[in-house]
Length: 322
Image (cartoon, rainbow, N blue to C red; front, top):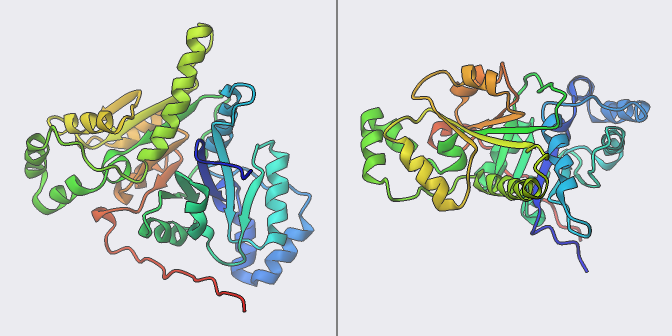
């Protein structure tokens, strides 16, 4: 019987987001593919250092200890890489060295494997390659570009995640009103449509998967009051009253929850995030991420009206063999 991923939280991650490939990329950019292959082969026994998304992935995988005996793991992480299979050997050896429970991978020489995302029933694709991410989002896939910033560094096993709302957890229908008509019209629109849940955004299913793990944690805590909840989710949005209520009602209508909500109304998000210290923060607006990415690991979701005009690379088609 084929292995079924449909009941798991499936994250797909590029090696560029999981590990620090700065040196490897420099070799590839200056000396080409063959030189990079030789570079990786020479260093195959030298583990790659953790990248920006490494703490997020490591903590997420650690939550599989909540699964009961015989139960499928809550989380499945799959490496998607543009490396060829030979070069990918160092990636997978590094996975083993860092004791990450990742056994599945896709390596495609020089081509983005994002087209295979639906086959794995994934809810998130993380990559440092903005072109791969934009191509994936253009196809309607939940993808985010991990920005070049410092990784989260703390010794706890907690997992903290923060989301923007419009264009991330929700669609951009309200943001379009904001961009077209201004703040006052935006608030009027949200009050008028208070009882109408917004359409789900690219990252709603990710939040739903995280919530399933949180519900298991709550079950464990009821049986063992000494258990400390590890997963914490925050909403960090520029919305404020009176538009905050539609966001809360939309989350409830979609069947998802957050632990905390920050309705900032124009206050700098980075000031809150620096204290909150999420292991990843998801936002659709580059302007918000410019400051945020200096203090916390950040992910750009290039979706919706705020990202219109961004170039979307043409898809690379796989030629059929004769």
